[in-house]
Length: 77
Image 1: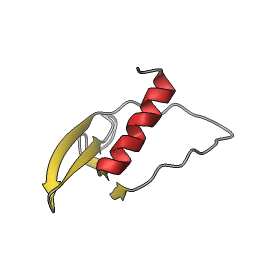
Image 2: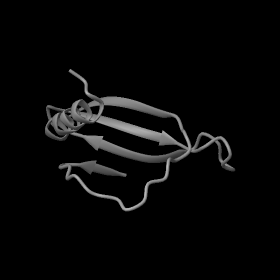
Image 3: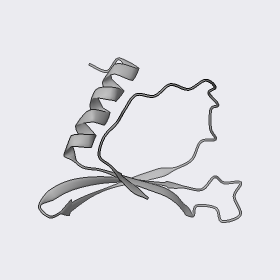
Image 4: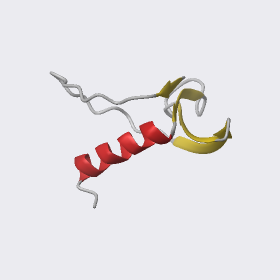
């Protein structure tokens, strides 16, 4: 579990597409600031199906950074 504060573009030598999973998002207020939390859940083939797997949080600044990345990556206007 982590709160992302900054994004930096990386480079990978090899890429592998991962299995699809479900995710839920939550919007919280903390110290008068909004935080977006995204939680992923285990693959259906896992022993504990649907168990919380990973969670990350974004504040407004990191959310804006991710929005800019998504716009560039997918050509969103």
